[in-house]
Length: 336
Image (cartoon, one colour):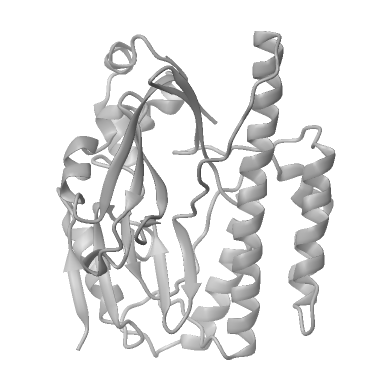
C-alpha cells in the first residue's frame, strides 16, 4: 500500500492535482509534499517521489574560467566517457558552450547572497546546471513521452525503466548535470572570493559548509526523486533560503521517514510570477528591502518577498524533519 504524506501550507488546487497525479502513477511507492509546495510543470515544486526528468536554467554568461575549474570539468567528461556512453550526449556536454556556462548564475529565483551570523560572513549560491541541464532534460522528456505514450495515468508521464538503455543514459546524464551544477557554484564562489580579497586587501579563508541539490533522483534499493525538496537524512546539513529580506536557514536533518528524509528547499511561492508582476508595487518592494543591498527593479519584482510564503511558518511546519542551526541575515542579495 502506498504511503502518502502532505505537509504543505497555503497550497492551491493545481498543486493538489499535480501531487495526486504523481502519486497515482503505478511506479510510485510513496510520496510526500513539503511545506513550501506550489504547482510546477508536471510535479509540484516541493515534492518527493519517483524519478521524473525536469529542466533547470538556460542562460549563458561568458567569462574567464579558472584553471582549476577547467581541470575539474575535464575530469567530469572523462568519468562520463565510459563503456556504452551516449555519444550524442557526450558531444553536447563536451562542447565549448558547456565550459563557457560555468560560473554563470541564471535568472528567476537563482541568487547570490552574502549574509551575517554572529559576525561571521556566509556566502549562499543558488544556481544549477544551466542550459545543458535544461536542454538535456527536454530531450529526455520528449523521449520518455514517446516511450510511455498511452501508458501513464496523466498526460505528461516522464519515466524510464532504470535497466533500459534510455534509463541508463538518463541516469548518467543526470549525475553529470549534478556534478556540473556543483562545479558551476564552486566557480561562482571562487570568483566572489577573489573580489572580496581585492576589496578587503587581504587573504580570506573560505570553507565549504554544504552543497545540496534539490532536484535529483537518488538510486538505491528504490529510487527517491526530489523536485524542489532538500535531503534531510539524520545529521545531514542543508540550507533553506527564505526570501530576499528574511535570509536563509542552516539546518540539520532528523531523518524523518514521514517526510521521506526531506525538507522544503525554500519558502515556496505564494504568487505566481505573473501575479507578482501585477500585484506588487515597485515602491513597496523597495521599501521592504530597505537596509539590504539587493537587485530591486521591475525585472526582479516577481522575486519580491511578498511573492513568497511566510518562511517562519514553513520552518515551523517541518520542525519534525529538521533542526535549525542558524538563521543567516542578508546584507547583499544579487539576482541574475
